[in-house]
Length: 210
Image 1 (cartoon, rainbow, N blue to C red):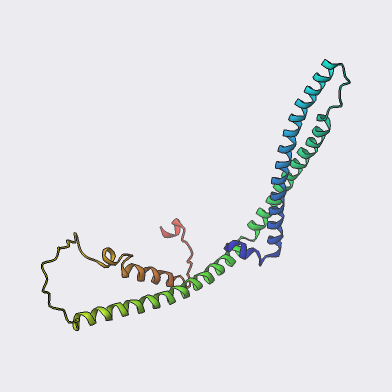
Image 2: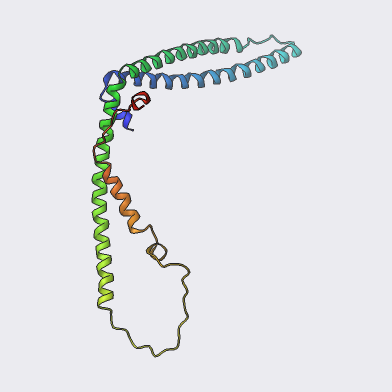
């Protein structure tokens, strides 16, 4: 995207964005680990209770439970997740502060990138419009040739043919399919206009206007 391209030219902002992205990835991984450990703790508790009950009923020694060790891991994972959440909040605040302090510079870079992209679109549209007009000229020349110098018609000695009825006006849209020529040309002309420089004027306050 255009904003990502602008970030590449701002090393400090790039570092902040990378930090936030890394912390977001680690946060997601930590959340998944906490959820998995929580499930294991719950399952271990059930297994420990079942083994203890079976051992007591059979007169055997009660086995050591596995839940405490897993719960300790869960507590450590939950604390790590909380730390990551705070780190992510702080990193997001640092990024927001940078964007606020360098708002004008970033906006200028975005406008430059937008203008450059508009020039690329305009160049491609200019080439496409030239090809479209050439296609239309060939089509018009063929139609004029057919009108001014029609091909000789063979004399019809057969019987009458069936009649086809066309409801409504016959146009290039309902006959040949596709949008009208004017629509295509207008769209390409608009895309070409994107390459023109955009003039941003100051907005007057309502008090000044009055």
